[in-house]
Image 1 (tube, rainbow, N blue to C red):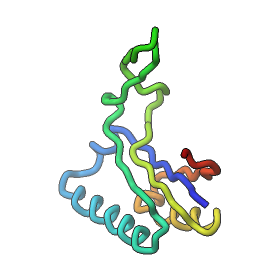
Image 2 (image 1 turned 90 degrees about the vertical axis):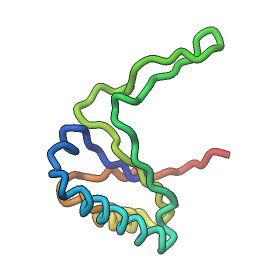
Image 3 (image 1 turned 135 degrees about the vertical axis):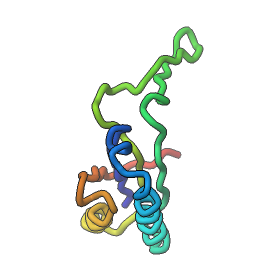
Image 4 (image 1 turned 120 degrees about the vertical axis):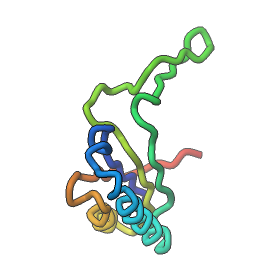
Length: 117
């Protein structure tokens, strides 16, 4: 079954990490990604741009109408998402707990019961 993991953050959080620690942070995350891509359980991992880059799109009179986003006004926003394909919900929870940031911030785990065709 597929599960979506969501990691939250914001620019303030990223700015609090000293520049000399970023290579280790990135290396830890890359190692996590390679570990679960290697088992076949991590289908994809994607980091998102800062919230100021998000846009809202509606269809007005048949044409796209684009405004500033994101839709939700929150202090933190989705920083990255991971799509898993694992044998059980318990396994998805184990992988989420292994996320490098999981000792500091929670990771949301959502079942994905339907797949678009």
